Length: 86
Image (tube, rainbow, N blue to C red; front, side):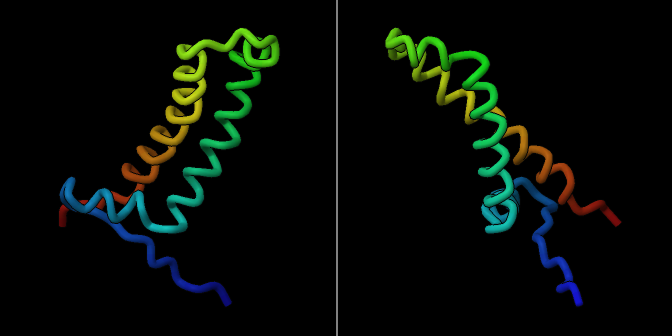
């Protein structure tokens, strides 16, 4: 039998950290960031890094390449878990 889902929801912005830091949510968003970020890194920066031409700006772009899908994934969870006013 499946366990009921006890994922947190939010009503006010101060509740959002509890939602995004909920272990299953955090695990999912980090996994999404690793998978999508790695694909985007390979497409956009891998040749520069492998060629030995990576600058500080390249590494900033690499960090953003992983940060963007992490943020987008979290936004999806935040939108999906908002409690509706009754």
